[in-house]
Amino acid sequence: MQPVRHSPAYWFLSDAWVLIVRSWKHIFKNIDQMLSLVLQPLMFMLLFRYIFGGAIDTGPVSYVNYLMAGIIVQTAAFGATTTSMNVALDLKRGIVDRFRSLPMSNATLLIGHVTADLARNMISTAVMILVGLLVGFRPNATAYEWLVAAGLLLTFTFAISWLSAILGLLARTVEAVMWISFMLIFPLTFASSAFVPTSGMPFVLRVFAENQPVTHTIEALRALTVGTPMGNHGWIALVWWIIVTLVSIPVCGWMFRRYSS
Image 1 (spheres, rainbow, N blue to C red):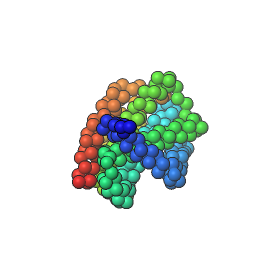
Image 2: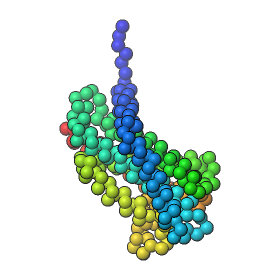
Image 3: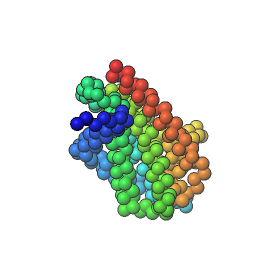
Image 4: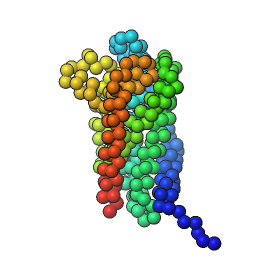
């Protein structure tokens, strides 16, 4: 009986699936990562909801409703940097060299990390929304608006994950990855409309905050979930993150091939 022959696409998808499952197992068997799924969203929500919320004027929108979009995007952004740490760990432990000896595509390792971390971030977002509902978040989105919001958030997280994979390949150590990721994500999330309206910021900071992609993403999610004006924020954010993804994937692949050669 002749052995079954499969196409290269079949083996590529099969290898990718094996490495996605591998990354999922690492996430769900790691107690630290599992706790971060719950504790980090809870801490940020309670901090801004009850400590800073009473001092911030968000007009006709309650602060908790204003806050949710920013907290969701911030959680997804910091969660997506897990990709860079996992890539750096694989490089440090030499697992990449072992995979190179196997008849598999090197790209599937990165796909496994990105896809698994995308699922992890969606779980973290769901936890965040549940916590928000418990502390007063009252969305008025339709089912269609929730689907659009989820699609935009997935696009955002996917782009940040691939960008984070580049950081993991660039830094190669967990320590370097942590501070580089922090230096990238911190200003983009805090110098935005995530926690306070941009109207009260100094001129230069306000210009930056109102025109950077994270603010457009936040404003689009806020409009979809609580009914604030969206304007062109949704389209601008979508274009930004598609461009980031289209640039990051080939750069990441080139860097990984260069490391593996």
